[in-house]
Image (cartoon, rainbow, N blue to C red; front, side):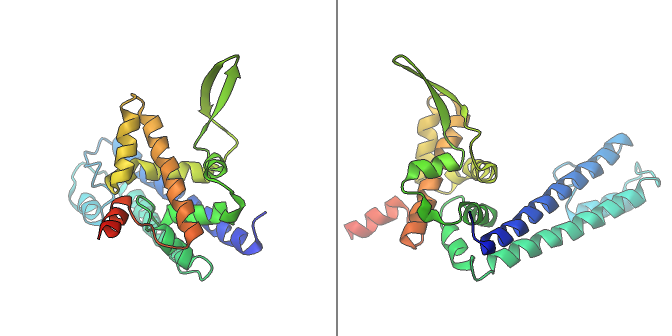
Amino acid sequence: MASTEIRDRRRTLCYRNLVVRQIVQMKNRVSGLLMETGVSYNKQRLHKVGYFADLISTNEELSFSIRPLLKLSREMIRRSQKLDYALVNSLERDPLLKERITRLRTVPGVGPITALTWALEIGDFTRFGSIKPAISYCGLCGDEKSSADKVTRMPLSKQRNKHLQRGLIEAAKLAPRQCHELAVTHARELERGNPNRATLAVARKMVCYMLAVERRKQDFVPAEELSRTAAA
């Protein structure tokens, strides 16, 4: 069981995740109001402050009946975003987490939320004696069904930490752009024709990197940089 200190901070992160879900719901509601009333708008720019203000003040398609609702929705989104920032900032600055989060963020693709989720959901990383149980705990490996001499891969195991699984898979979609090693891993798996497995392979590699960073208490260093250093 995690310590009281970790559980307290985990509660804060869970509350932050609730705030983010509410922001998404409110943004969807704004889009819904505009679509219901036939108002044309730019989906990519809708929630930009300047564009939204222009839409409210200059768009002639906008009926007066929904203007107050849109303004209220925008204000709720703005306040929720400020709360989101404050919650994440408080966790990043927390003396119990600060050094650990800073180190984890040196791993390619690991942003503040992924680092916080890892630190708070994994807790004491020393409980994982090897990479395999850590990957399993994160829900990044499928079950296997054996029959005679045949092994069939099953869907991802449901015995996992869903918060880590979701966060790592999302992070793994962007990580190959930031790291040559992860890009190679992704490309190799992609050649087999399954994009989802390619993403999972990257996520598993990221778990290896984060666990290594935790154990060594050192920032992540790409393999090519280590090779250059050794050659020099």
